[in-house]
Amino acid sequence: MAAQRQVYSEAKTFSNYQFVFCVIFPILIPFLKAVTPTNTMFLGLITLLSLLIIIINQYYFEKNIKDKKEQAAKFQELFDTNVLKISWNKELCGSKENASRYLSYKAQKYKKNNVSLENLKNWYPKEYATVDLSVGRVMCQKVNASWDTQIRTSFQKFLLLLFLGCILLILIISIFLNKTVIETLISIIAPAFPIAFYIFKRYSENKETIVRLDKLSDKAERLWELVLSGTREQSDLENKSRQLQNEIYKHRSSALLIWDWFYLKYRPKHESNMNDTAKQIVEEFKNLGV
Image 1 (tube, rainbow, N blue to C red):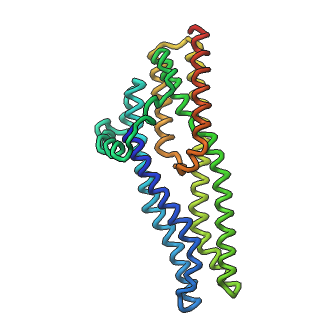
Image 2 (cartoon, rainbow, N blue to C red; image 1 turned 180 degrees about the vertical axis):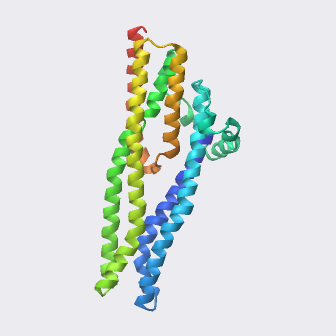
Image 3 (cartoon, helix red, strand yellow; image 1 turned 180 degrees about the horizontal axis):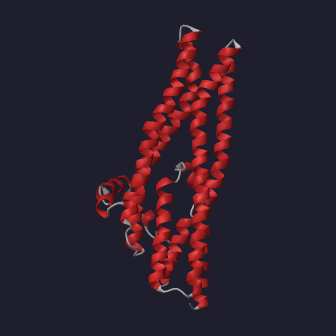
């Protein structure tokens, strides 16, 4: 898990730089008017910069973040298949040897940057260790299938507010710096375009992630109902757990990254609810005597 956390940290660092490049920098573009000798040059320059921001974002930031997410997802898949005793899906995740590449290096890098590793202990609720493996495995997968849905729903609202705030700020700056209507309009539209492209791409990806999480949660719940029914053989449960794990891996490798400051704002309450739910689920299972 140390390697996974390190790679996700690197991906989020890219994401932070991406935000500065795609949002903060475009907001400052109208101020270039002060250093350009002619209005024609100014209008051409801000249009060119806006297009360059979109191109660099797509082929540099997006690509690197995507690669980091896939690597982190493979590291976490190594962890899950080991802890939960699930078979490795070579067709989906590639060879285990390739997935393990850089694992030790990234883990050591994380340990060097973090004095304590306490936050990596008890990754899944420890209550799940008190039941049979085939049951505890599904309990852990239920956690993975519904971990941050509420946080992502709140993030959708924040993205819309962020977009409106950015546009308002650009509007004020452009009106203040420009004298003609044409200059003002271009000073608004040119920097607003990369911001809109960035934010609404985040909004669309996060929406897809929420929909995928809802479907994933439904599949996990149906598998849990099979466990409670006590009508399935252990080998059948293992196969269905592997199928569910496939969907969990796809989700992890494609889910939109949420900024740490936003995530940590909601995480304590979310973890408390998860631990309370874990106790209830274990009690429910034990009371049934399945």
